[in-house]
Length: 73
Image (cartoon, rainbow, N blue to C red; front, side, top):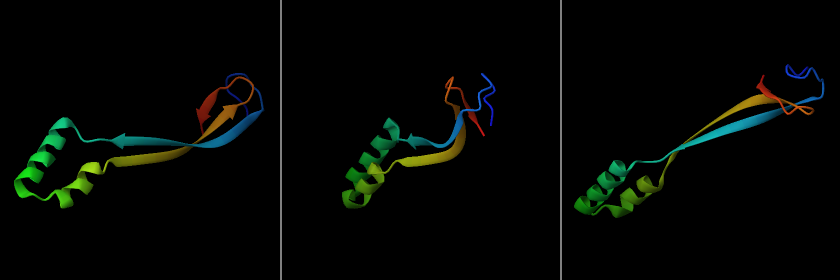
């Protein structure tokens, strides 16, 4: 494999994972707290409040050892 920037053949390939976490907004928290107060169901609602949605995506990147250029393969 050849670096498109400097033409070097000193290139390594590595796996990269992108992780995105989505948290609840203020309105969502207020709604859950109001629901907990109204129904006194704190034992059922606490796990829902602490959960956050996480998405991860893995792809491979090549990295030139001479110039540091990165590109997806």
